[in-house]
Image 1: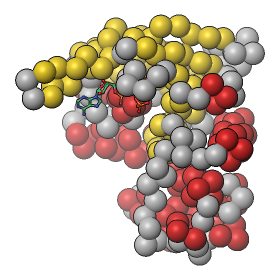
Image 2: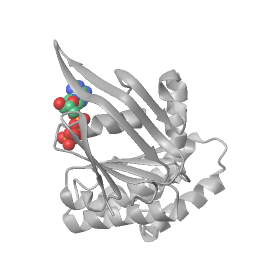
Image 3: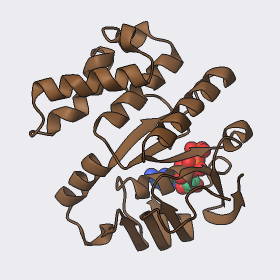
Length: 238
Ligand SMILES: Nc1ncnc2c1ncn2[C@@H]1O[C@H](COP(=O)(O)OP(=O)(O)OP(=O)(O)O)[C@@H](O)[C@H]1O
């Protein structure tokens, strides 16, 4: 039984009959078709599928980085189709944290500066409050001693931990992770997934991540499969 199938947990993402088409020169690619999906607050959900199946496209739509060709997406109860670009970027900044397979850290900034970076846009946060969050989240990901290190002085797993701390620092309701373990060896990838799961359990943060790795799928609490742009099945994970 999924831990968040009960009514106690509010819906955080609702996708209704979404299609996404890309135009590439004179040809068109139907990247997503007829997607319906509801995600409740606190879920630890994997979107699984082979390369080119539409996983990144779906995450980009949920993350309000891109918009659907048709259909509706509600994030935290808000219909994203009714929002201006400014409202969408505000929604993204306050509601969603991103983790990427290539970590996407600033190479000239230290670990702590990378974590602090997204907080600079929140004018209501004082420098002391920012500092407090940076220390807290670097601590949560086990990198307190590496605060001054730049990304090239860190291992792949440590870089991904910095990225997790950065994603968490803004207190998002949803963390989106596009193949977060793709550039890590198996053991390090498993550790990163365990860390994400532990954070998911200790907070009410919803995690939605994509993967094509069966071992990563096995660590999800809910698994939806996508093939050729369509959701094909949903596996209930114990
Ligand atoms: N910007 C784009 N312009 C045109 N076609 C695109 C664009 N982005 C993705 N596509 C196409 O849409 C389909 C879905 O791509 P998507 O990147 O979402 O798949 P994926 O499952 O994330 O793949 P991977 O696991 O390789 O990252 C593919 O056929 C891809 O070639």
